Length: 416
Image (cartoon, rainbow, N blue to C red; front, side):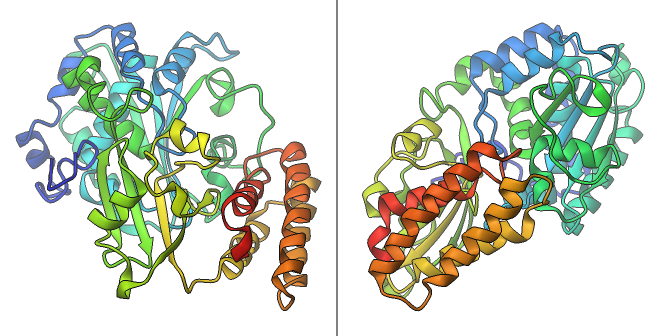
């Protein structure tokens, strides 16, 4: 706990030198790894499943179930399993994983090793956004320290478990943050999406069962194994236990990041952690979850920030990015930026996305100088187009514009 925060993934930030594994051990690091290797893999998976740890990458899928499916998979190459950390943090407004990797890479690595032991993975990769230079350097240094002390490599800590873990750099594609496209990149191919099913748990990296989790998700694993599922369930809410890192930006007095219990409200994030609206301006809207997220207005200020509560409001928690917009911000201009971003990042593999992203930017540009009534009419047409696009596209990028556009219709149509 720090101030009004409850820190799990960020518990060592500011307490240790991120380049020094000895300091990490001095505050209790590696102890959970030692304990985990005395447990059965099934027991670890059971503990994570009971804790209801939900993936912190955005989708909120239960991490314990992913581990169970991967460990039990009888894929075509089930003699080998892989573990992959998705650290390709390309969502606009999101930098939570960078904070972990730069300030406590050892916690991330320990979480990956425990998860790898649970599923029986012998090889793993940390796929880091190529522009994250300090993160890359510090994670690589942490890995070397783990190897030097026998915490990685063969027969870890005298056990029968071995794991080789290395860093793979992303090449700048937003789309490679999507897990199946990430696997294509890891295999040395162009970052194009795969059709699913099959899912990574049964047919992942090089055809073998593969567990893919986000940096923040892995960072929760040592805490759950150390404290137990019952304790973890006392933090946050029933449907969304634990903590979440939020990255705050926009028209607030203190942009930055914080880690709080699940269930905090948007108003509390803005007023307590963001220290209120900048220059005394009035709140107009917030974009939750980055470009692939949703807009909300003041009616959502007192809604609990959890996966399920926001879904009921037609919004998403996503990556935890919160972009706050004051009354003088143009919702139209913000929407133009989002749609141009998707057009630029579309890989072009499937026609619905390749043509649809271009069409949406053309449609919104057409009404740039027209009255609001014309803009609002066009917004309705854009929502229809985005729905067609979402239904026919191969990957989440083609399914993303509809989220922001539908939320605009619901909450901010009069401001478009």
